[in-house]
Length: 167
Image 1 (cartoon, rainbow, N blue to C red):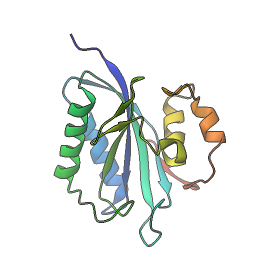
Image 2: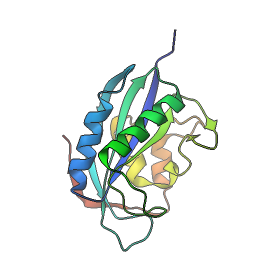
Image 3: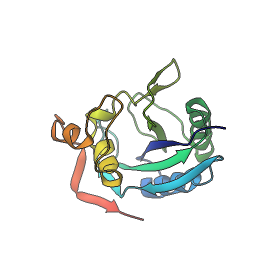
C-alpha cells in the first residue's frame, strides 16, 4: 500500500491571461489520480526573476496529498503543462504555465529529471510567501522554518500591492 505524501506544487504564468492559466492549472491538479486536493494560496503578481523584457507573472502554490511517486507526479504535471500549451522559449523566460514540485513530504531526491526540494525555492518570495500562507509553521526537509527563510530572502519579486486574489 502506497503512503500518502503532502506535496507542494508551485504554479506560475505570464502569458495569455496568466490568472486564467494558473486557475486552469489549479483545476487540473484536482483531477490527479491517487491524489487528494488540500488547498491553494492566493494568487500573487510578481516581477520576472529572469530576463526583464517579459510580462509580470501570476504565481500560487497548491498543497495536495498524493500516493503518486515523485516521478509519476512529475510526468502528470508535465502532461498538464503540455496540454495547456506550454512551450519553453528560454531559461527563466516567459511561459504559459509552469508547474514545479516544491516539496514531496520530507523526501529529498536528486536525479537528472527532478530535484526535491526544488533547488531555487528558498530564494523566491513568490514561492515561500504562498507556501507560508498555506502552512505558516512548515519546516523543510533541511529543518529550516519557512518563516526564517522568508526573513532571510535577499531579494523580493512579489509586487506587494498586487496580490491578485484568493479564488
